Image 1 (cartoon, rainbow, N blue to C red):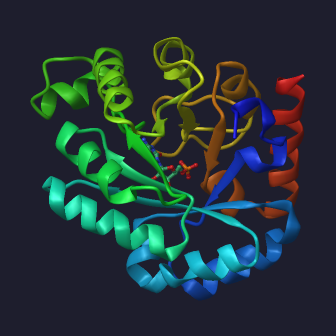
Image 2 (tube, rainbow, N blue to C red):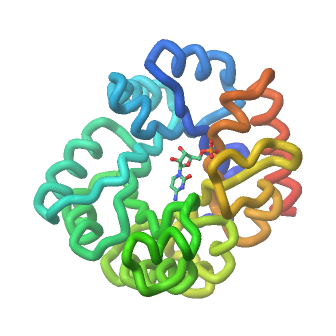
Length: 236
Ligand code: C5P
């Protein structure tokens, strides 16, 4: 599907960063038909949440399996095959060449799309240097985006601040998925590179991942709907 054809409502991905399946199912029930796309990450996946992927897919919802795989190519390829069978729509891998190559091979012709995580949005230049990298965030993000495109990866996870520059590099062939989204007035938490939903869409993001501002809200459904409205307005 071309990015322009995605409905505003389907561009919000709610991160189910919750302690267990019961809490996740309660949140899914509260959000009802207001949310069509969910993300399952480490916390829920390691607490028995993977079978939720198939259950949500059976209800017509899409699921982003944010498993951020990184291992030798063969292990990533076989793991990716298994995730494709679960019914997920997106799977993340870290943007290392061997890892991305393995994931693209494992995906084969399945409907699953591979997203490469360029640089985690909680990292700034100092964090990268402390981890032994020579490049700063923007240089590393761009280098990894180019490698991802060459290797046939379907999309990128990036901070909204990088979306505009990445769009110029990868064109519209790759989906740009941005966490680090904060509706005006919500707490930043550990995110360092953040943007409001409307500004992130205007900057070129296709999908927005929002966790705590929705799942920790007194009225999660109202927040999700206000994000949809902001997305629709930014799309014009
Ligand atoms: O609660 P918050 O909106 O900050 O959640 C953002 C979600 O996006 C978390 O599940 C986090 O793991 C994920 N994520 C991120 N940065 C990336 C990739 C994923 O924050 N680069």
